[in-house]
Image (cartoon, rainbow, N blue to C red):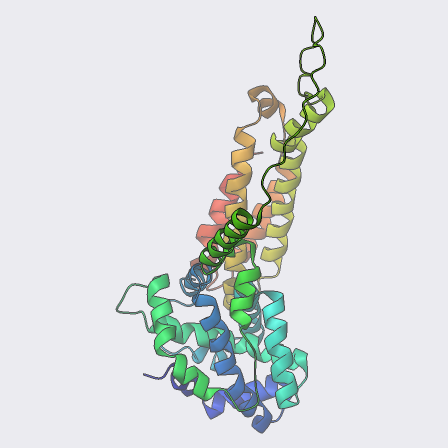
Length: 353
C-alpha cells in the first residue's frame, strides 16, 4: 500500500478541474502543485507523529466527526460546497501545523511552483480533508492510536520521500512545530545528553579544584546578648490580595465569558443558510458548549449569596437566541446536524437566566 498514491487517486481529473476553477489557475499548474503538496503535507504529518504529543494531536484530528466514515474522501471536493470545504481545511491546518508550519510549507511550494503563497494556502486547505480522510480510512478495521499512526508513517517513510519532487525541501516542518509547542515538553533525547554533560562537569570540577586554603579565625568576644536572626520577610497584604484575585473566580469575568459565548452562538447561527454551512458551524457550537462547561466550574466556586443575586443572561437575550435557533433549525437538513448541540447550548444558558 502506497499512501501517496491512494491520496492522488482521490484527486481525479474532475477534481483538479474544479480546483482550477475555484483557484483561478490553469489545470496544469494546479496538477503540478497538487503533486508536490500531497507528499509535503504527509512529510509534515510524519514529523509530527514522530513525537508523542504530535501523534496525539493528529489522532484527535482524525477522530473528528467530519472525517469518520468517508469511503471516498475526494467527494468532499467534487460534490461539496467549496467555501465550506476551505473553511474546514483551514481549521485543520491551523490546529495541526500551526501558522508557522503552514506558512513554511506554503512559501516553499509557492517558490517551487511559481504560484502565489495565498493560492497555495487555499489549495492546501482543500487538500487537507482529503489527506486526513485517506489516513483515517487505513484504520477502519483497527484501533486508531498514536502508536498505530506512528507505525503507519514509519511504513510509508520511503513512499513519501520518493514522491517529493527533486529540489523541494521543507526541512522538519512538523517536528519543528511540535518541539516549539508548549505541550510538546522536553524532547526525549535531551535527558541522556544532559545527564552526560552533568557527569562530565562534576568530574572536571573534582579533579581540577584547588585544595581548601586555611582561613584565619578572628576570635572576637561574643556579645553578651546576641541578636536573634532576622525573620524572613512576609508578603504584604497587598501582595496576598493580588494572589487571591488572580486565582479566585470573579463574577464580572463569568458574565463577560458568558456574554462572549452568547454573541458567538448568535453569530454562528445567523451565518447558517443550508446543510453545508451547518456542518461548518457544528464544531464551533460544540466548542462553545465545552467553554460553557468550563465557565460553569468557575460559577460553582462563587459564594452562594453572590450566585443567588446575580443575573448572567437576561430573558431578552435568551429569547433572541431561541428565536434565531428556531429559525435555523427550520432549514431542511439542519436539525439532523445541529439540534443536539443547539439544545445543549440553550439549556446551559437557561441555567444562568
